[in-house]
Image 1 (spheres, rainbow, N blue to C red):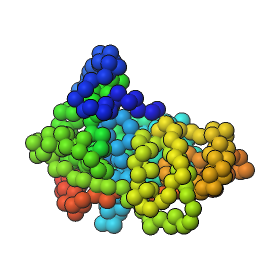
Image 2 (cartoon, helix red, strand yellow):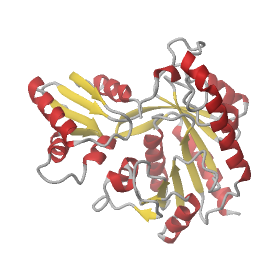
Image 3 (cartoon, helix red, strand yellow):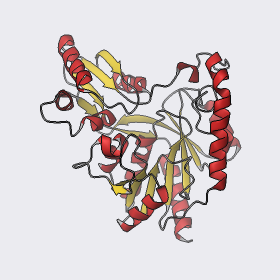
Image 4 (cartoon, rainbow, N blue to C red):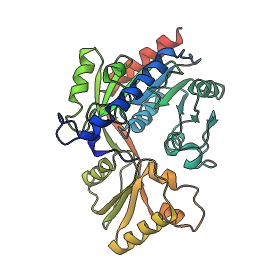
Length: 342
């Protein structure tokens, strides 16, 4: 879905009419979440669990953060496995993701990215997914998303917020972008990471610091040095905030002839793939997209327009560059040690 514009009004203190009309539904949504969390009896996994989650619907950059944490923990010798819901996939799980066999329609796009870095499990029931991961050899689990899911106990929870958009109009879905009230989320957070550049996240950062929650800043950077070569690009993306991807490309020196955006988790049709191929040819441009979008093009039938688009498009793998990363890792190490002493 595309985020409604009234979720992020140009004037931060204004409350658009649509947000006011939808406020009662937001109240019901928030109340249902609080009741669900209040009644839940979180199950403990046999290994430490680190959660990387969002406060808002849409792209805040949690998956690059999860990948960066995994790389740091794997470098320390941890047997890291990812656990995720697999948004957009048909599998309920628990199932271990196999990029050679599974497509995005099976397990979702983000699990395919995670599986390239570490064993990844998709499960609607997170506690069952954690048990499956442990049986599969996990020594530590990173939950990508699941901050609002009460089924599995977490040993360290990281809340990821986009610095440029913050909490938007401050209202709950569907009146605004919030998945839950800010104070409720902060009450369960062990760290806050602001991703990207901007000042819209300053308010929640101040509230976190007032509670003694450490705040870190991160920016997205290519996992490998890009070689853009000659010629302009047609960039396309179906992610939460595609403008961030386009801005990153420009900052890296890519010349963009045109950009085309789709809703988050968008499954490309044959006609859309063909239109992108034709438009790139008209512009004399090369195609470039995100790793997440490329994951949704994988396993397309050979010679189909989607297969040709996948073959033609350069993709940009990214990771989060987290400021004061050693401090964050030290706090995670402490939490992991405490969990293992239980």
